[in-house]
Image 1 (spheres, one colour):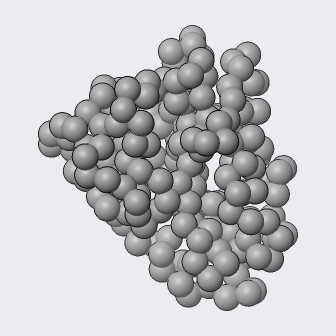
Image 2 (tube, rainbow, N blue to C red):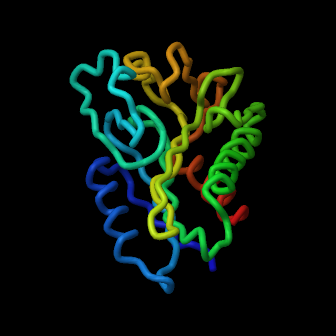
Length: 200
């Protein structure tokens, strides 16, 4: 059964995160899977294993300690965020397979714009010319996933300079706009969600 896709527009990170927790804790074996599509106001999020030393100079941007996997990342306007609320046991996939599925969905969408992107087994996410363009952070509870991916479209990348992205000092970050791609978040989201649905 195909997941229900919800377009949330721009939403506060904390509110959305709490809604995902609530959805996951109250769902049962009959609950439909959902995909939430959103964009967040500027925020840094630190994963469960996130080390505070990777926050260098966060200034006025709020820092939220989240319950997803991974280290620190930044969300802001012009970045597509897709949250996958899936019963992975019912779908017979494990977390590694889900990470790969999300990476491949981003890679295929980016390829549609004529850009060659790749994943790295040792550092989850998607890269173009060694620069990170897409991030993944997930949490599994009761055999169900929440959180998901973010893909940089056309945003202010400056805040990434004030952290060690994903815990890697000196890791550079890029976005589709840097490669001459002009697309709306809505169009990009549509392509991404379709790629995920097809893979599921």
